[in-house]
Amino acid sequence: MKLELPKTPKNKKNKNNNPIMRQLFIAIILFALLSVAFDSWFAPAQDNRLTLSETAALVSAGKVQKVVVRGEKLDITLVPETEGADALSRISKKEAGTAFSETLVNYGVSAEAIQSLNIEIEEPSGFGYWLGQLAPFLLPLIGLIFIIWFFMRQVKGTNMRAMSFGDSKARVILPSNKDKRITFKDVAGNREAKQELEEMVEFLKNPKKFIDMGAKIPKGVLMTGRPGTGKTMLARAVAGEARVPFFYLSGSDFVEMFVGVGASRVRDLFKMAKRMSPAIIFIDEIDAVGRSRGVGVGGGNDEREQTLNQILVEMDGFEVNEKLIVMAATNRDDVLDPALLRPGRFDRRVVLELPDRSDRKKILEIHSHKKPLDKDVHLQVIAERTAGFSGADLESLMNEGAILATLSNRKKITQQDLLDSLEKVMIGPKRQSHLASDQEKKITAYHEAGHAIVASVLPNADPVHKVTIIPRGKAGGFTMKLPLDERKLPTRAVYEDDIAMGLGGYVAEEEVFGDITTGPSNDLKVATATARDMVTKFGMSPEIGPIVVDGKSAQTIFGGRVEGSNRSEKMLETIDNEISKIIHRGLDRARDVIRDYHDAFVEIAETLLEVETLEQEDYNTILTKYGIPLKELPKTKEA
Image 1 (cartoon, rainbow, N blue to C red):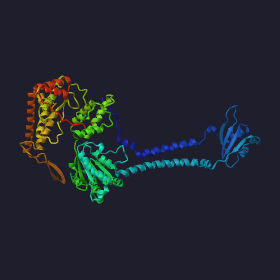
Image 2 (image 1 turned 60 degrees about the vertical axis):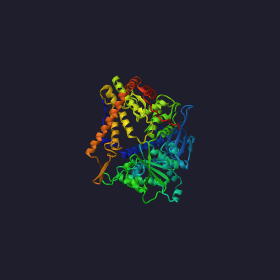
Image 3 (image 1 turned 30 degrees about the vertical axis):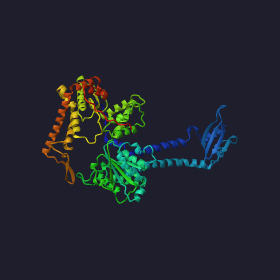
Image 4 (image 1 turned 90 degrees about the vertical axis):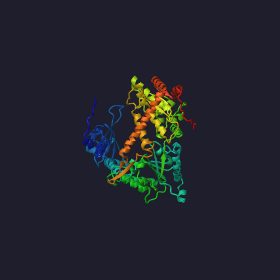
């Protein structure tokens, strides 16, 4: 049963949250509190106050020991009624313009009683006198002025927030901020990108020698690459190396629902940077405002295009910014407006690639600086197993390793922590609550054994490093492969073997159980996508030949551009036939391997049912037993 709280009507909520009424209510409460405090401070206690007649009666009875006259105020000290008791104090007030003794005579007090009375007259000092006279008037006035000032401050703050709507939202990292300043030493990998950016550093440090030579340093640097490759860190490193202010903001920070706000923020940003030049402006995800103009129906007077126009003008307009460099980052450089990429704006384009094996080790070393590592940790092994990881992925891996060690109450991070975190980042966390039946475990074991044996036999497939049937994430089990080297130009034979390896689980289920489960669904999806790329993008189909048939043609409709396919119905049919041929060829190759090496295939599966996980050493023992040659990783030197 789900219990829901009653919802508050929107009109009542808006009424209660009116900021003006709330501030007015606070001001009234403050004024009332000040009034109460004033009355309680200056109003004397009623039980200590005497009238003149009561004072005269006490003097006649001889019960007054001393009277101190302070202006019109009388401080009366009574005679203790019992021996050893403290004198009692009372206050009273005499007639204005009349002496106290004269007042007593008027009330019928005898001359003897007046002469026996100890009367002291104190003239008030100038400051104290005037303070006592003016305090009843000044304090309420000061309280009222304070309330008016408080209320006007709130109204002014609201107006200032409205007026600052067009101010830049950029965050600034100053060279003096050592906690946030980084240099090239803090960014591993991307050697070519660093060399390209060193020119910017030299210009920011010594601009005069370039200007004297008549050289114009590029005003803009566009960094492109996959997510997590270190675009933002490199931009910060350039500012750190040159020791100049770094203005950072995202492309979405410019965009608001009101037209003109983004352009105003661009102007304010460049104005701030010019005052602190030489400086660097970094716009992350510039494609949020830098997409090609004129796309779609709606004209060019929208907020995003106004912002883009202002950026173009600021970068290469009438005013020359000799000591200001604009850096930007995007994952989609193909959608940017051509005006951004022309000379005079983003002159340089720096492409950041995924790190190779040696760079991955350096990145791991950087992210392990403040982490206590055990003696058994070998970052080279982790670097070999993380092919295709970006810098952000490696940082997440090290962080997950630290979390696992903390949860296990260990003081240091072990190698096993890093290996477990690697599998967690790649596939997902262990599903401890998943209780598979014996039949499901058997199907999973033979499925993964099919992947493993095909990968171990086919010459161009990557060697198997680990096989497990422990469920992680969405996978009931997985086979971990490691590439022999960092491939930049995979061949058709490599793709063919990868497809056959991916279909090994499908064939294993069909051969052993005579039926197919939903387990190979993701394998079929990946194999089909690879086969389609081979046919349509890479020219690896003999039937179609070296023709790219995945391109798209653009048609202009109502001033916009609409993408359309340039493939005929006959070509689509040919593509589907070629994809089917590649998939069936992979199925046949996987089936031949499983049948030819059936004994090794069965032993791998049965061993998985017993131990659930086969590491590389134990797995290679089974391969050697059946005469299957091992694929060794290339030896790399420890850096």
